[in-house]
Length: 464
Image (cartoon, rainbow, N blue to C red):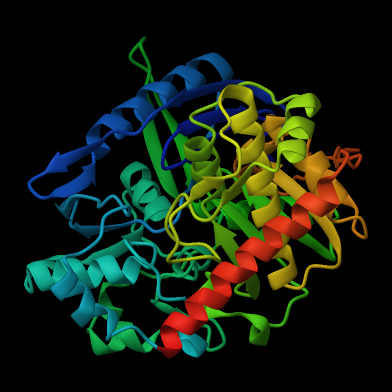
């Protein structure tokens, strides 16, 4: 049994990170970089060579310093690679770009029924099958040149191991390519003739090969390469491994992704960015999401400092609100984010933005029928009051926060430890104390009334 540390690359859209996790479950080293998304003609694509160079350099460093002998990958959603032999046949697309309207109309008509894939119709490349169809429209011979359609974590597993595999948690993440109830590829895959482009499946965390690391002294060290995983599904796996069973997970980062395994799939409304994710063991999980981290950054004006209770109390007293949505997708599509009420700047603007994200989370929890315990993981915990405000809004539920906000990376590590017969992590989550803020409930009711009026307006427009 290995007693060496493992390296986890947690590859986000905005930040990519490396964590070195010791055999007793502690982070003993970390590094980060920002992926470069560059323009190539009329498309925006990943500079994968730059990111690969950073990853190889950091891996060599931690192998030399810490004797790391295993690597694992956790990856953000909505992204794929087309590979042939040992190369890409097309650069990796940035999922935040919209096909031309005439192409979008054609490819959107090809999407499978929601009750087959539980992938709602989404803009940009949020259904990555949509971007595959876009590339097919641009060049009908392109996909034929590929021998594999690789999900993003599996792209990196392949780059380090040389082996092309599939993994169900990523494929089942609103891609339009997976039918969760059938536990098989969707009708779109067969209609487009892509089934033979789909590599064999390997379990997330399983060993799929090795990678030779060359050290500065000329030695070559072999490290085991483990199959990667979808980041939010990794977080769900992590908290289950800590002993949580009947709970709703709020995984926060660029996205706020809310999993409620207790919710029946029949509750899902495709028009409100509700979907079924698929766990690493092939089980569909009711999910709702919105781009909460991105929305907070936009609505707050890029505020990065803590927010004081006084600032929150002030904007509540002023009745300053932020209304959806400040980014695409989410349960309130078709509306442009805006502020109403007295103008706010600086910390007060950030307080309104934080309240907005908390209220959007609260709305999403209602839509997905969350009545069980809540676990909050990820970057929004660092805003300070988000968990406490949510605990106040959800008085009938216990809200837990993780002492370690990197649940996706730790879930990826837990998968590796499971594969080698270890489980070093302990549950150190804390119960969030509800914030005591005068006027919060009335503020919530007024915000909901405004949002409900927006929803009613949407329905009237559709009828018209």
